[in-house]
Image 1 (cartoon, rainbow, N blue to C red):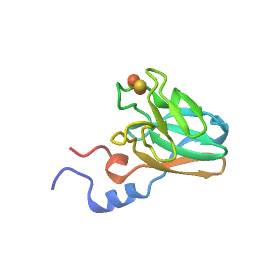
Image 2 (spheres, rainbow, N blue to C red):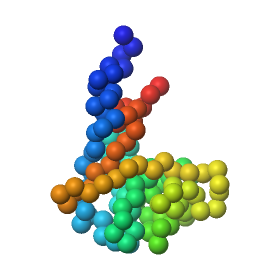
Image 3 (spheres, rainbow, N blue to C red):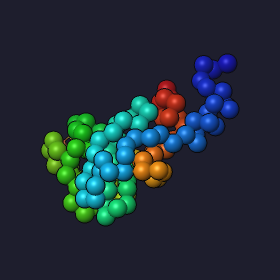
Amino acid sequence: MTGRPETRERLLLMHDWIDIAAVEDCPPGTSIERVAGDRMVAVANVAGEFHVIDGLCPHQGGPLGTGTLCGTVLTCPWHGWQFDVTTGKHRYSATVRQQQYEVRRESGRLLVRLPATEAGGRQA
Ligand code: FES
């Protein structure tokens, strides 16, 4: 025994979708901050299409979801780092990239799926 969830539990976690918001919580051209599992995520609505990236800015941990969305570019409210929400890439640095998460709509809700290791807690 390793203390980690057994295979069946891990497989179930892999397929879990986490309800994070109502669709109307994030109108087109805006972004919001939400918690999904043990993560803070930034949800962005680009012309009706939703994108979800890691919500902690890699600069100093700023809350990306509370930043400003202009087109596909989300600007961190603390010091202005910018990310393309469709790719997770920093606008000017090729080496900085936010993790992206799958998102879908269901019955007026937004659901996000985290990788199995994050849905059940981070691996050591
Ligand atoms: S914490 Fe985001 S730009 Fe500094």
